Image: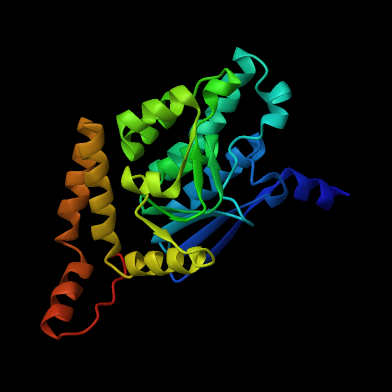
Length: 266
């Protein structure tokens, strides 16, 4: 009975191989709608993966035919019924977005089917996004009478652009993968049935590069977008550290010897 209840409430599945962590939102019978407990679990899982020195890339996808329908509205009468409970809920929500956004390693959302609401926010928090051609995207807050957390909205504007972000949030309309690609929200569209293969392929390419260099690049891009002084200082420090790393020596040696470098993140 306990296992059946857990299956109904949903969970995350995590698989790590060759530096790539694949996190799957596993609630396909509800189109991977994310419960409050799952938001908390997602924050903990991604934070732990980011702290693991063996992790070089995090991929997030949904089980079955959808990425995620977003937050589970079915539990809102209990966990998001007023301003007080909404604050706690949104803290859990924002912690998950922040864990993805601030992960020291690159994050990739692999999207098929529905990517709505909180699922859209989760994808927007990722560094990269690829989708199958049947993917659809929507921010339906205006039809529910609620507001998105400001940090999530910042991710959406950065990933989608202000004009389309305004249209989606004001109208609660949905867009297809082609429109999301043309807006720059998606890196690429892949054929149906090839999403996981392509996501793993991209992740392996990134994971094979020098981890300290990739981390420094992620921090520098975050600093350029946020215009935050502390973020700028962190990016400068991570960039400077690459020049004293063993990996930098390995990269130069591999170039001279015309071989593939073997990086260890040191």
